[in-house]
Image (cartoon, rainbow, N blue to C red; front, top):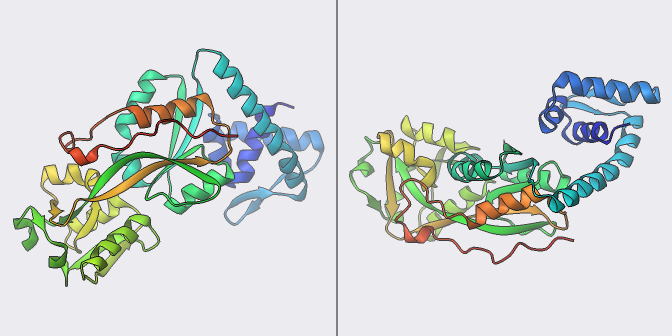
Length: 317
């Protein structure tokens, strides 16, 4: 039996998806199905069954998974150590992040990393922030990049950079006549925002409360792109990361306003499972994220975009 087949099987059980396992291992779904069939023929029993949300292990499949996951983990650690001895950085990295970071913060870093390490495949997954933490703990992703990192015992974090929270309004809104606005002036406005459990929503609500504003939300969404579209069609105003609205403000579909009481900064962090041995490619990716000084469009001259760089990566056991 090939260890790679066991890894594919473990990926199916952990994700509940054949297509996900195929994408994570750079093979087709038919190849994954064939690998599962070969295991079932070898042991003369069914290993997978249909579930409401995809597939799940049968009792026999659960026994195979429980024994295989440690074998796969040890094998991947062995591969990582051997790669560290060699000079070639290769393999795959699975990164989970929220839309505003993945679409508007990461692209220049990804481009720099892939230029330096073309033999590494980077899988970027867009997830809700709570799912990023869960997938890290379950081993479904190698790294997460989130805003307002939460303190969790199983999770270690590294400072990445900061982004500024700004107000965006439709171009025809009366507020669009100015470039700066006081938070107190937003009393009585209709807001479009993130859903309540999202960290950036909690932070923006706190800013409003501290200045005596009780927001009225007309719409709530789980991603920045839908929020922007709602503001563009006049459903309300929104507090959002500056980097996420540079394109819309440049083309005139949104007007960006800074806060006179600001700047209000949104911290971003790289997170990973504490105690997990990180692959060389993952360590190199972290190095690019933390050591590259890449200004985003429109931010090159902003002094408050300078972030504290970690002196070293926390050692893992």
